[in-house]
Image (cartoon, rainbow, N blue to C red):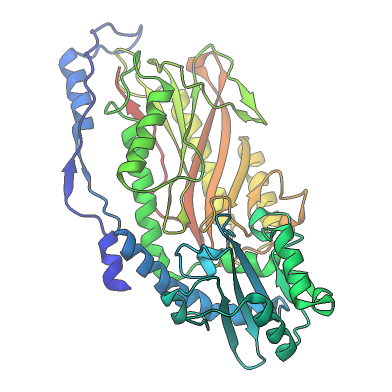
Length: 469
C-alpha cells in the first residue's frame, strides 16, 4: 500500500502552455499609478510558470490501493454494527444500477450479475461476510465467502437467516439521504419473499450504520486525498489566470470547458459541473435559492470583475470541493481595491471561527451557534453551509449548515474526529470603491477534524488570484 501511494507524490515540474493575448494599452484608471506595457507583459508571462506535475496511479494501481483501504474499513464494521444494533447488514447491487455503497463495501470492480448481494453477519464472536453474486469474481475471495459456481440468492439467504435468526436486518431503506435509502422497490420485494415474512418483520433502516461507515476516514486515505485536493487547487489557479482568461474575449463557458478538458486529461471525473459566478460594479447580481446565481456561459469576462469558481473532482472513490475568488485588474491597476481586500478578510475571519470552534464530540448545532455569535460580535454578515465530504461530495455526518443546524436532527449530531468536511461559507461586505455595493466572498476548503479543530489540507486563500487585463 505505502509503495503504491508514493505514486501520488508530486513529481518534477512541467511547463504548461499559455493562451496568447494581445497586450492592452497603458491607459490608467483615474487615481491609479500607470502600468507600462512591459510590466503588463511581464505579469502575464508569470502565468507561464512551471506547475508541479501531479501524477495519479494507473487504474490497476488505483484498484489495488482502494482494496488495501477496504481491508481496514472491513475491520471496523463489526463494532459499528454492534453500536447501531444491526445483526445482519445486506447491500444489494443491481446490474447497471449500482448501489452507491457497493464500491465502498466490496472491491471497486464492475458487478453485472443482475442482482449481486453482499451480507455482513454478526455471529456473536466475529464478523462473517458472504457475497452472493451472479458471476464468480476472483478478487471477492479476499474479502467475502464466495463460490466459483455461485449458488442462487434464494437458496443462500434463507439458509443464513435460519442459521443466525438476526433480530435486526439492516437495509438501505427509510432514510433522508439517497445513499442511505438506495434499495430498490423490487429488491426489497425480492428480499422479503426470499427471506420470508418472519425475516421481513426484522427489517430496519441501516441509515446510522451507513453514515458512520462512510464518514469514517482511515489514515492511509490521507495522502491520496491531499493529492486530489492539490490537483483541484492547481486547476483552479490555472483557470483563474491569464493562461485561460483573456479579459474582453474569454467567456464563462470557455473557462468551464477548459476545466472539463483538464479533468479528462487527468482521467478524473466530477460530481457536479464547475460553476462560475461573477460580480461587477454597478450590476445587480442574480440570485438563486439565497445564493449568487451561476453566471451564464455566454458572459464575457471583463476588467474589474470579481470571479468565483465552485469546482471539485472525483477519483478513487473520493471527492473534493473547492471555491476560490479572482479579480480581473483594470487597466493601470497593480492590486485589488482595499474594499475587496477587506471583504476577503471578513470571510477569512469566518473561516477561522468555524475551524477553531469545532471539536470532536461537540454538537453541530452548538458549534454553528457559536460561529454566528462570533460574527455578530465582529459585525460580519455571514452565511455558513459547510458539509461532510469524502466518499460522497455532499457526505454523511455532522455538517455546519444554516439550513440544517437548527431545523433538523443535524444539530444533534456529534462531530467525529478524523472526519473530512468542506468548509463552505461566505460573507457580504459593502465595498467603498464599488459605491458601497455588497460583494460576496464565497470560499470553500476541504479539511479534517483534529482535537484542536479543523485543519485544511492546503493553506486557505487570503488574497485574490489576479488576472491581468
